[in-house]
Image 1 (cartoon, helix red, strand yellow):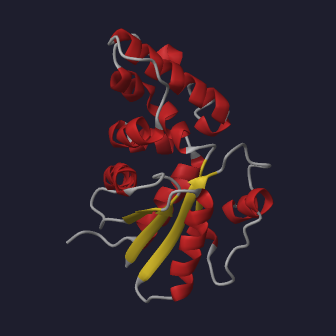
Image 2: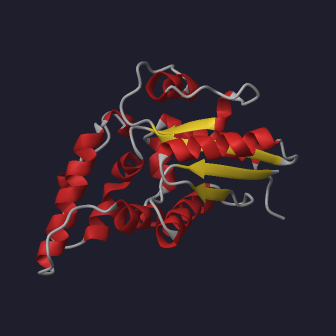
Amino acid sequence: MRVLIYVEGGGVGYHSMTTCRKGFFSFFERLLPGKNHVEVIPCGGRSDAFEDFKLEHESGKPGQYVILLVDSEGPLERDDISSWDHLRSQDKWKKPQTAEVHQAHLMVQCMEAWFMADREAVAKYFGKGVKISDLPGPENNDIERIAKAKIFDALDKAARKFLKSKGTKKQGYHKVQDGFALLKDIDPEKVCENSKHARRLRETLESKLPDRR
């Protein structure tokens, strides 16, 4: 079985798309030891990710399983809402008729929420002047309850502190430069421990990916 993940992110251009792909690839490789590799396809914007996912899914190529992975962009209406129902409510996206429930997955409330499950790695990445306590932690082992704005504010401040310590012009968190590098640093196990949607994604991938030979 070949598993393709169409992911939101990467911006525009070869360099940023490659950086995005490598960041997610590293994360999934460590998340799924002993399993065949997933193929990560960065798509830029979330609408582009959905359209690219639909095209690949509807092509019906045998021997492959296609997954859509996007930010939820905010809290979910209820704990038991499906990813497709959330995307229909928020983005007006209609699930392809033949798509399965487990072909849509969410990063709740955004990719950067995953970083808050491993604040030690984030503090180490930004270095001097950044403390773990500067970053919002999981609430009752749940990073999905941390507001997106709160996460980005903390990451912006961490980046500015780091650059100030180097005497560099101040600028905030940059998704391509910082976000995809952090994907390579954070512990996937900690992410799954603190996010039920990350656990759901891992379970789906484990069920579809064959063991390495």
